[in-house]
Image 1 (cartoon, rainbow, N blue to C red):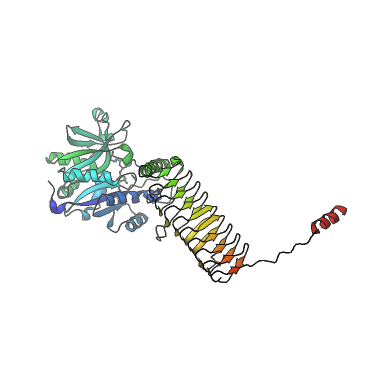
Image 2: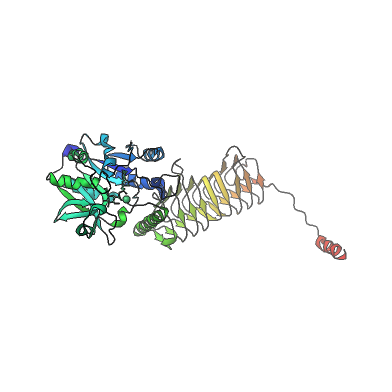
Length: 456
Ligand code: UD1
Ligand code: MG
């Protein structure tokens, strides 16, 4: 049944219906779930389902949305819907992308961030199996507000909007998610004859079903879950979607072999990667751009954040132990068996195998060789108010506690730095560097001092 040469898929993403209920200067679809814009999640789902082309439909003055989406996908083209005249009108705003009939269409929405590639694949499969239109529906106990799917046996014969439905239709609990697939060669012909003679005076995409049915085309419903196409209109709904996203991520990690000691207290991003047998203790936060190998331990209350835009990830090799209370910032490259302990901050630094940074330390713009030991309270002084400078510490070097290493500086392998030193020059291999005032001990001084004070 497939039209071999036209079995290519175009994802059309509708994002022109703004609304003001987010109470925000940021366009609704740019609000984030798991560290990625809502519309970004939909783009990922389309790409995950192998849609070769993507069309985005935005309203006037939505450059921010098209810019963000074009950044996320090189195959996406933006179209503008000048007036908000309904979902079919919105799809037609992108007609340049499908008029030639060479792509099958799948329609998704910028404010339904919980859609998945599997779900778009189900629509794809229905079209490949011969359906001319496939609509994703779900059963809902509370169908109020949704369009209802009117079935006749296996065939979907109409979608009736709540406002246009009679009592019998309103009693139907099988609802329209809005996600629809259309066979390429019929799509344009169907969409362009949709009218606006209905309660809202809008061009309803849903009318495509009755039109196709009347033409004798094959129209099918694909069954999904209400949760997967949940729309977000305000920040309360945004938090519900975030909660669902986090629940999914936690389950995905646990089923792939990651231990989450208190799953409900740990938060992930859309792109977090964690290898099997890693253990995540309670209250950890993974911002975007973080990748853990196998057997990594993240102790409680740690915060990890990469920088995806500038490709500065946080990457942690196997058997490293991070935290408790550690902060890893963009560009932290942590080697095998490295330990980063409590109240340590790492940024843009490579720490090689087995090195230890255990207590109260800032390591920024640095390279630390294998087996080095960085004492408590060590600070790399990497910034003079204008530029950043680099600190290089060789293998097995020993940095005494409370040292300040003023960059640019190189401490060669095996060197020792005496505690409390402010080091401003390079230190050669196996040398000792100490920079501190000489210690004096004056016997009996305290007793004399106290005596004077008491007399007074
Ligand atoms: C729509 C469906 C309904 C379905 C429901 C699921 C139609 C006619 N109805 O109703 O059957 O149950 O979604 O949530 O399709 N949009 C535009 N331009 C427009 C109008 C809408 O881009 O001119 C976009 C909106 O941004 C939104 C989506 O299309 O993301 C749906 O529009 P909305 O007005 O919310 O439709 P519903 O009435 O909810
Ligand atoms: Mg809606």
